[in-house]
Length: 622
Image (cartoon, rainbow, N blue to C red; front, side):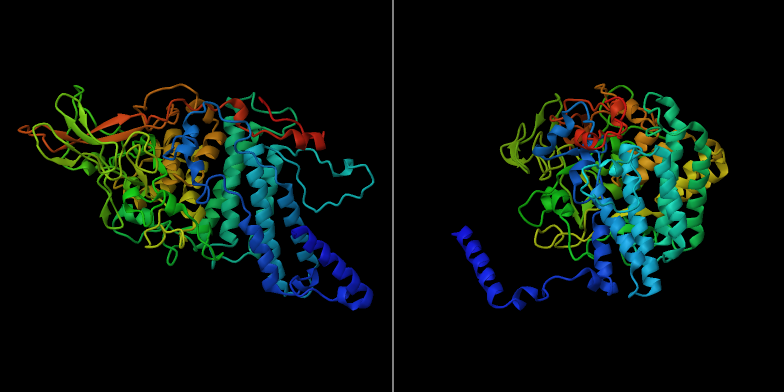
């Protein structure tokens, strides 16, 4: 019947065409012609907005599960347990080859250059924004794939049967970084100095230079550690002698952002943990964020809070608690005296340490911990999150339940009491604090944000001022300027709540790595930082080791995600009865260690791409 309707429609149009030729010549009322679009600034911006919306994020609020790929988080969702069970990363796991997107941006730029019916100021800004988007897309390609064909114009096939003129070879890796840097330097002054967080600005252009130059400098510098991760044509690998020039560019661009006077560290709350949390929630008076994907501006929301709100505080009977920050990350938050230490679960003799309150074990640590992670005993939205694994008896046995908030009888009692938290942890119970923690960062405090009909409008931060300071600190460190390195890093740490500055002599590579790990956790940096420092194959080396005893060591192996179980101690008459004790553990679904191979440093280029273009060479070690 459906097909017949289409046939009738075709017949009707055919007869209508015979009787009235004007019927088929009418202008459509539901489509806009190209000339109409380029004569209206609002319509041009709508096309540009679509290009912005397509910017890729390997980890983000719309694909939360990717945060659990390494050692930052455990995926408390049965469909994602495989992330902790596949030992080897795939060669194409973070690959990208999106020349359809690049062609669309190139077309926009060409049409914009020809547009005469929009104002000169609007045209200049639209062009600069489109070039910013194109540079971002090429940056995404190069950090994943290495050098890729650098195509800056739209191409059309002439149907001659000879496609060779469309076949570009891969550019050298450094040539893509050089393009990104040069393009942003060229257009930065055509962009506004602030005034928006969701569109390109001068600050965003400089932030991209800062990040891209730092990446290129790191690859040139630390690529010497992995000479086998290179290609003879330079498509992969950057000469070591180029490192200092890139570091110098990164430092200069970072300091230029600082000199704009537009951005600064968010520091409005006396509670440093709350202050850190609100960097990602406060949109009204926040001059730290330089560029963000603001969903509300796009007229839509996302489900990140629905998926990650604590189970006991769900706003409707849907998921929640799907991602648990790892103990690996939690123990990395140093003490406020600038020293590193594991969470104290046992004394020197191996006996358990007892606490009056479950929060006491986290006392005296970097406040960013509680701004990033909901730990046992913490509150969210004004309510205590109920995380505890059961009662631990004097003989070491445990009284617990397989149901959230479950009840049972304790020895010597005739009545039942609650023996496990309404948030767990319970082994292999998905959508709970299965490893003892929930995520705090990016989880919305607004009522209704945990409902599917409403969702959350929290933005995804792509560039912020704290990263600029850390980029500057790292670049200065690599250039041997320890005074600058210390000052820029200490600005971030002071805001975090550290009372004692690090001295220039205390700034070393381990400190650089650690500070980025903590400040930028769950912000899509962990993979790219480990790759550019050539640490990934050493930290995620496939060995099933225990939780490290040295969380401040950049080379500490971290291949499996651990958890922490809080227990209430039960021994009537004992001075420790009713107190809290903790045990480190490996969640049951985690039974393989991550192994990052040398072939993972640059993603696999598909056979279809290389078959269509024989000039494309393969990436190494695959």
